[in-house]
Length: 503
RNA sequence: GGCGCUUUCAUCUAGUGGUUAGGAUACCGGCCUCUCACGCCGGGUACACGAGUUCGAGUCUCGUAGGCGCUACCA
Image 1 (cartoon, chains in turn yellow, red):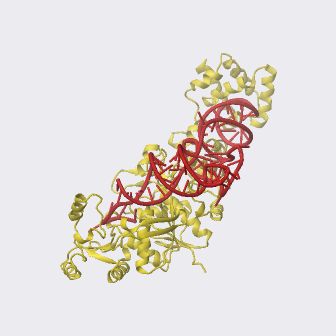
Image 2: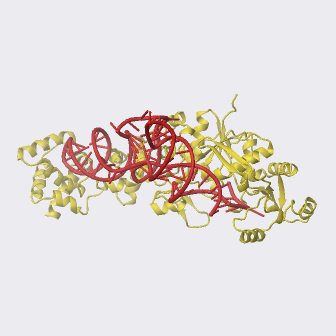
């Protein structure tokens, strides 16, 4: 008996897709998939002033990367098209006329200057039942005069006529009943003759109705205007969809919602993909280019404002689809915590296709003027190092010693492990190692351990001195894994050089 | 200013009248160990404040304070 689930993500192509928008769309996606419903992709380009070329494609590319798929909409087709609002002018005109004919809307001719003046003259000026009588519109001027002005080519807008004094109730799936008195609503502009386009409010109601949208899941910034939308549905005599207003994503340190400037400020991306602002040199970094895996971004984002209530943190998309629940979404804004995302990324890095990391490492090696040797060599290093990184970018910095001999020795490591006996240990170890025909770490290790024990040395003292000589500092994987990779000749060469350099 | 939403550890959060207020990240400590990392174990002054309802309130009501959003011919 209940209507099929149809939800939509309807961005405005004014720039790159904000990470908050990504989360909104993700929740729509999870909801649609869980209910076997449809997710539509609609472009809300009713503001011709703010259109940015490339933005639409950017948004599409972003979702493709993230693994969020649509069933209908711009670039996907469907029976409710067109899905670009700028291509639906005639549809909106028709419905604006319906409102005009019903007396639910009226023409207004006030210029920008006149409106500014009114706002200036009256504190908290609002275009509504109290003030519309002294403005220039078809109510104050009369319809005949209005028609005459329009015939004369005077630019106009159509405003929604709000009846004051009524409590409008919005039933929100996340927040429950939200009540707002219509008196605080102003007569919103629904349509502007200048570009023959509706504003968001009208277009969104008409489209959601025509596209049979059952649930509107969107950001909390829309909550204050949702009563207006309810009134619009009523004016048309349409049944309104269910609403769910998601809390906002906040900047890490308290103040304000996460903005594109926060990216620079805190040093992490706020956009899924890198974005070059058209016609400028300005570039905003993206999660993809910064080395984040889509699974990590999705998992992290899903939990920012929702959680299944079962202490589970790592979830596949399918699990999230199964567990998602609007009533379990939190009501308050969530601060963006990049450290947590890093942890998710570390987790997914461990199980991702090694080719991703191998390609990244190879590129880094080359970029640093070193020789990647072979695919096999790189692959082994990646296997050894991946548990030590959160981002592929950290690879080179963590494992450069596999590709280049140390040129300096880290002070702290020296202080701790390059004690006065160290040169002697390493020299003797080199002599012993020289005699070993089988350089395989697995067979070498017990022999070296026996040798150390036979000498009565401390394992740590010998091994760490050797490590500092090979690596340049006291870190890295198991030491015989390192000697395996470097080979006998290079290992001994580095060890003897350290003795010489460090004396 | 007006209107609305919101308020549990540093951060994301569980919690729907009776809990030693749980988990995750981060941080700190320990174990493992040739180092680092992983892993495992452990740690910390979290229910904004004030009234009320109730035998009993993080959970319900009201108020105050803070945070956020909206208040455009932007979405």
